[in-house]
Length: 456
Image 1 (cartoon, rainbow, N blue to C red):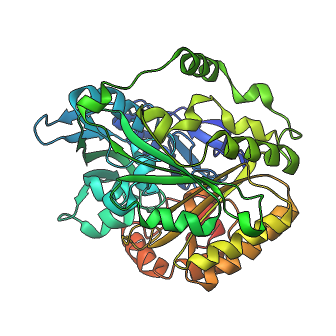
Image 2: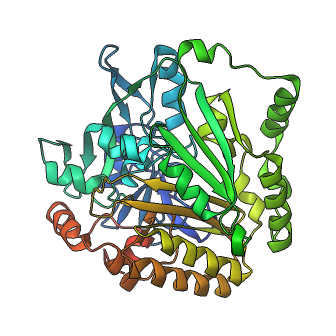
Image 3: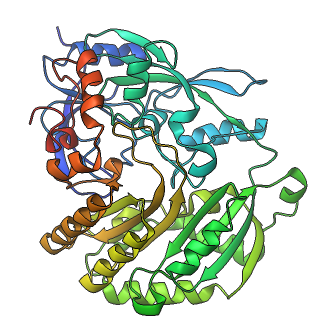
């Protein structure tokens, strides 16, 4: 007899494209999660955390979706070693809120704090410190996974290591992560000792990046509208966790406090309009943002939230793109010249990206479906212009694949199966492992079906 409450509801990623109807359950414990699995009536299944993957990676339009955000227990913590065991629905922000006052920080964080531990593992998220700290999976010691057989298996680097590494970056396709053991990073404060530098073009970005290897965190905003000699101009930000003495200098003036209050009061849904973001408004924003930052190096001590999670200050900022939603295109390429070719295509397309972030990865490459590898990564948010945008992204795919690059599956909503196989040459080895643990293909997603990783 069915004991799980299933309900059909609209479900989308952060880009709000696509939106699907999904049959969902919302368990509040690991036991209820096991019951939901047993009550799935033979359907395919997928876990869905906080919906911060952008496309269809956490969507399953024909099957059963387990919403895991209520699995939020902190299970165990070693105050000496910083090893933490938590359920999969706990967010990055919740970890920081609880453990930063104790002198510990999450070693790898993405651009938002509203990502669950399960999602961070499934996407093997990266941060601004890939060259020093690798990916989130590098700091996971063990986890418990609900398998297609109905068993709960503990896996680690020494125990069922094939399942462990296939699950890290496995896009939720090996099973449902119930809990994980994570190594936190000891810090003196949550403040960031930061330098920001305005650069005039892409060549200057690469030069500053080479000079910044001693900084733990690096990232840059760039202007994707400008071409010619100013192509790739932007603002470079580099920093490291501040000492306790430096953190004592952190202070906010009246203007900063007013800005913070306004940001917290804002909700992106207020500005929901398909007319708000276009090439003209994006050009104006880019000009203002670029010139707001004076030339030269500028040093400051800032809080961790504006440094790591600036967009979180505006709730529901994804609604600014209107009802059409938006698509993010994030790629990594090993050749710097390919970045210039990609920016040229974007500039000539007249489809400007409102948010564009560039940084360089370290050499770590987990293989399988994991995204980061040596090279330059560029992340771009485009209003959903429809078919013209999809055709431009197809052109970008060809450029990326030609030089041995790849795009981030956690941000993707439209990559073809053919291009996926070119970009991820280790996909077959990953699927062999997955098939050993899930031979019937119980765990699926709309992304896995689109890419040919599971039956359509």
